[in-house]
Amino acid sequence: MTGPTCAMEPVEPQSLKKLSFKTLKRALDLFSPLHAHFPPMFTFLCLCLRKKIRMSQKFNAEYGGIKSTSSQPLTHAKSGSQDQARERSGPSNALALPGPENSKDPQNGGALIDLIVGPTVKTKGLDGGLSEKSITIVSASSSSERNFSTSAIMERIPSRWPRPVWHAPWKNYRVISGHLGWVRSIAFDPSNTWFCTGSADRTIKIWDVGTGRLKLTLTGHIEQGRGLAVSNKHPYMFSAGDDKQVKCWDLEQNKVIRSYHGHLSGVYCLALHPTMDVLLTGGRDSVCRLWDIRGKDIRSKVQNDALSGHENTVCSVFTRPTDPQVITGSHDTTIRLWDLRYVKRTATLTHHKKSVRAMALHPTKNCFASASADNIKKFNLPEGEFMHNMLSQQKTIINAMAVNEDGVMVTGGDNGSLWFWDWQSGHNFQQSQTIVQPGSLDSEAGIYACSYDVTGTRLVTCEADKTIKMWKEDENATPETHPLHFRPPKDIRRF
Image (cartoon, rainbow, N blue to C red):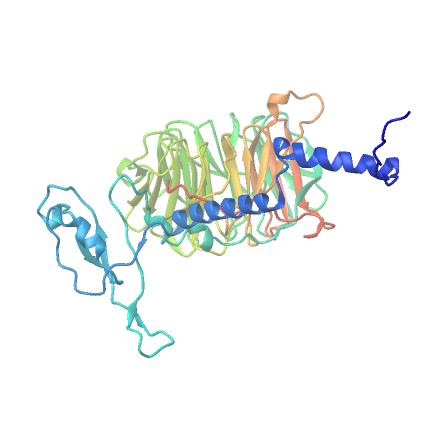
């Protein structure tokens, strides 16, 4: 006899796929918090907390120095009344500065110092019954707890820094060989048909500007030629060298017609005044001498009449066409400004820390640039006020520099680097490296002199590998193919 049986409820059949999904869902609900997969509500709360913390930090950083004090007249607080002053409500135009706790003198830092920083600006709300409120005043704290700087409310220099003008890059299009030594000096004819170069082979060569062919070779110096200049009023060319001699060449007869004696050592630089018949020479005897190109020397035979005062070699000199002013640069790191009318020094610029080997006067502006191993600096004329440094450092000994009317300044370094700058902003828009000719050493990649032609469209460099290189702008370059990469400076070195 069989026992009683219990009736079982019928089980709804489920597919294997549905059972698998149920198992996965239960596992996900059970173990997802352990693996950083939080429920949606918890994730939303975390995001809100992060945003609140981030906004709080940003608010404290930007407006940490802003306070709203009472609009009522605020009296000078005494010791121990700082907490009461802080509890006063309402805005005010008083600037509260905490000081030493035990000091009773408000000027020497009492518990609370009131400084009136300006008139109160009152505004009315939307409702006419609301009381008038003054604007919030920025307060600066002198305590170590708050590090609020006045630079936050000052206008920064980069906001006013001029943006550079786009210039086409320059390229080398001709290499001239002919000298047997280092090429040390260059000068262009005012008619822009030829230029002359002086070399360590003791010769002066005259080249055609258009073709680059040699036209004439002049000999007369017994040491290397350091300086050249061509007169725009007379058919004369002047040369100076390490043999202590300054010579005047007649270009119609191609011979020396006059020699100037007076330097005690090698003559390193030479310049002609554009409007006056005055020649200036500077050398290793630390003196800049003046000569009358119409005849005998006018001021060099008497030592007191020479431009003396430098303590080392005078290696660069130039003059202004509109003013009887002479500017000299020396190895003693100084630049001196002279007045030719009284043969006296008017200013001494001591901004450089290294030898001032090159200087360049802007063709149309009353300012000039000076180059040294530490930096390139710009100065105003005639007083010599410092303007600014160039925005990059070439980090080499700069032997030559020139600038044209378009505002393109070029500097040549002792390591063969040729950098191009925008004059107005001081931005370096091109960095080139000269290539030595075959058979020369890599150490002979130095640039000793450079000059633009009269039009300013061609550049000639004199180099240590005995070559002369000619440069011009790339005609195919556009702002799209060669964009201007400029970032305004964050801080400007004063010196």
